Image 1 (tube, one colour):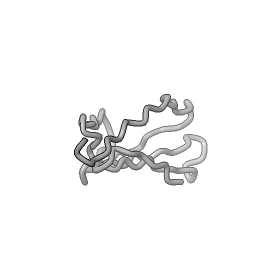
Image 2: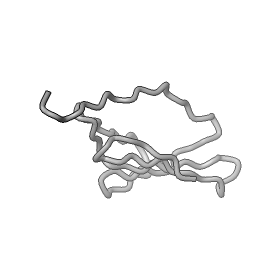
Image 3: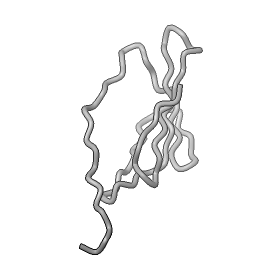
Image 4: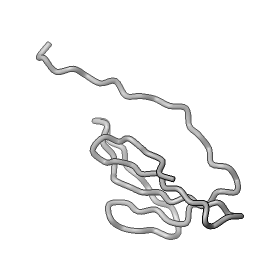
Length: 80
């Protein structure tokens, strides 16, 4: 061993959004998309493209959250 410790990726079970939740916009690498499909690239080294996915409840537009994807680590965080 060379003194560095390898970190195994954490694999989680996917969670699906309820039918009443919409994605009004996605921001990827500083560009905002309000329609269509947005591809997010995850690298084999655990990195990803930096992105923010906005979520809103259809019946209550004030109920919002953002899923933030951190590019340097590939980790996500839900911000309510």
